[in-house]
Image 1 (tube, rainbow, N blue to C red):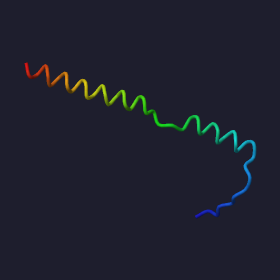
Image 2: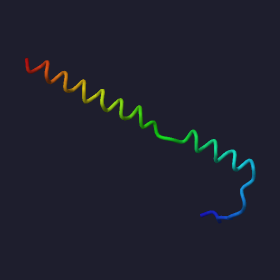
Image 3: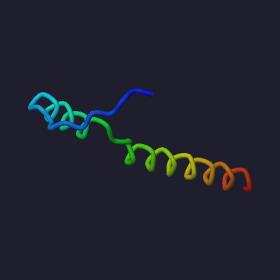
Image 4: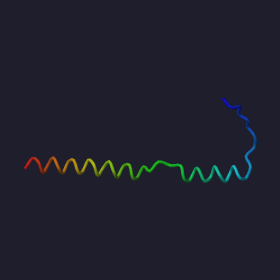
Amino acid sequence: MREMNFTTLTEEDRKRNQYLDTINHAPYFRIVLTGMGIVSLFTMLVLLGAF
C-alpha cells in the first residue's frame, strides 16, 4: 500500500477537486424517472391484460 502524505493543497489540486465535485454525482433524477416509467408501464400492461 502506498504511503499517505498529508500536505496543503495546491491551487491545481483545489481546481481538480472542485471539478470532480461538480461532475461526480449519481443521476438520481434519471434513476427515479426510469423507475417510475417501468412501474407505470408494468401497471398499464397488467390493467390492459385484465380486460
